[in-house]
Length: 396
Image 1 (spheres, rainbow, N blue to C red):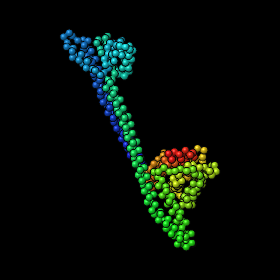
Image 2: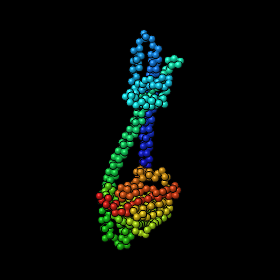
Image 3: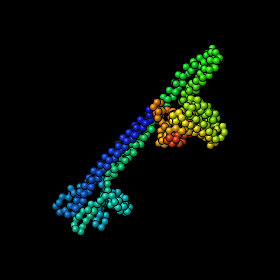
């Protein structure tokens, strides 16, 4: 079962839908901008024809309508030049700036020559004028609008997505903590009863039977107490204590070794004797190590080798768990820690996600895939703080 992969499909679908919306908006706006640009071109051509008519107008021709056509252009900036390129007139251009800055009109004309094809007004064989123009303010706004709109939509959706994700994670955390606390509470009653029965059996059973069965029963009761203790600490701030990592790791490895196949070899390596220490919560750290070792056993199908390396850089304690299993593709180094991700037919895919949360949220360390090769195995790395400040931070 892979809940994470299904979630990824929805994310990809939403991103694709957003991309289609943005592209459709830009294409439609560009279509409207092109239509408006054509209309502005026709307007300037009409004005050019009016100038030509005015040049050859007779005395009895009513020219008021022609002046209305010229005056109706209140948006498109244009410059009229003679055949030598001298500026004769202009419209919809900052006249105040044109009077104070002589280079302004020339620079505007040069820009118009680069962006738009001029319109020629032929008065006679040797007499021509030229109209140069540029896009109106409205057209420029229409061209840039879809990009600005798309940017705003994307920003809004990202903010909404992160807000929703944060709210969902907070809700999941509350549900997870509630389930963990309830599980610890539910385990408490039968555990107390089992302890009472163990004490009763110790008093009534013959020595030969008691020595054979009671030690194993006590181990199972202690195991249940450890599990209950772990669940009860979820959601609270555990008190961290300075512990010998080799001792704690050896205890967990011995427990897993007894329950693993005899074809699996466990080897613990320590670079600096047996005194590398770190601030941890023993129940929570043990939970993480068990998850990683069980994950390694699953990857090896019950046969292979697991190496645990313990080292220190005098600031952090570093624990590497290396298996000889199937390996993980590099593209999945982060995905394996997502809730719901699992390569097994059974299970909820919470082991690695829970382990990462414990290490990073409760023990203030780091957990990640250090390296992996398909068919060769995987190494998970845990980094823990050796400094006492970790404990003070947690207490505060």
